[in-house]
Image (cartoon, helix red, strand yellow):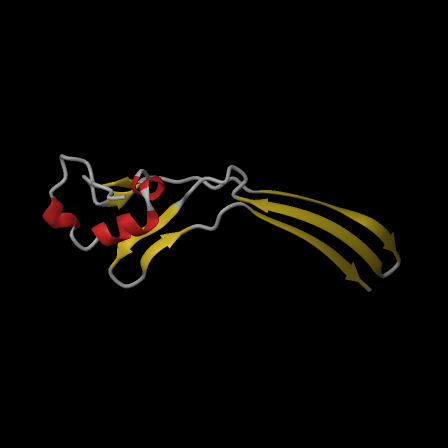
Length: 102
């Protein structure tokens, strides 16, 4: 499966990046503006909810739930960077936390 950049982009400017395109696929290449040599703007929607269940004197029991990247959108942080390579934000992530303070 060969991926090609848009026809208006010079291939010589992309030669070090073509390997990254083939490695990550079409979904990643759609998030890159090849004409400007930059990644497109991204958005990560996160949500968190929590409550205190018990509060007695010095004792507090708290429950919290978090969801990161709620829309499960592919977010490119950096593409074919000189020092760090390609950075892709993690997919949807869930976490539940129970805190007990005394």
